[in-house]
Image (cartoon, rainbow, N blue to C red):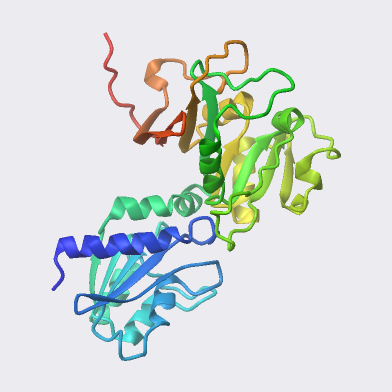
Length: 353
């Protein structure tokens, strides 16, 4: 009989498997699976791409039919219980004769949540839920957002000077942050399905918004590049429209932000968007409460002048400020990164006189 501590250890391994699928599986979520028998791991798997084997099926495919009988299956997300492009994983688990299924997070789709427990328990399989739940939910936050609000999870990335500026003198390069921070951004791009910028940023910086790190999985395709513009944009002379990935560039002109996000999710299978833009677009998204996560790089510079990192109307009072939770602050070369999720609901109390 596994102890709660054992369950957490095996689920952590399943989480590592799931992370291999980050940025690869949309519109599906990344999922990992580990199969254990008599206290030993006998198989593991992960969902690699929509339309391919789910994590449970991938792991079970590595075993002879008799090997899975009596085993415990650890999976980061509730096994699917309905027929999709692949068969229902609950049916497969029952056919395999496993004794126990442990999953971390329930299916974010309200019409499916909890159905797996009912189906598996009815078949005589012991079910345990909620192991490493927060971590498992974090893995599928993009998929969850699409299920709940019909829009992707939005990550805002900005690199700024210590005094909150992103502007540079004309003729200088487009980066304030150092090479290590830029490499980290490459890995962040690899985990999203679209990168959004503004027409203003395209005209000013001519960004490529491509994947250029050798550390990125060869399975990862170029994310969509989305240009938000109110006045249109001349396409000649800019990398986004002339490089080998030009077909992955979308221009959304005079499109309301919420509608644009829903279009990305429903038409282009986007679960997660990374915004790399100037202060105007970031400010508009912030005002519309469409940013779910911030990744902020502080560079050891003080520049002064215009070009604030985030503009817009802003919070009307400290009580209406955006607070971050699950905050990480760490050094990246000479820069400092602060990363956290936007806290929704009543903000924590102010500790000021």
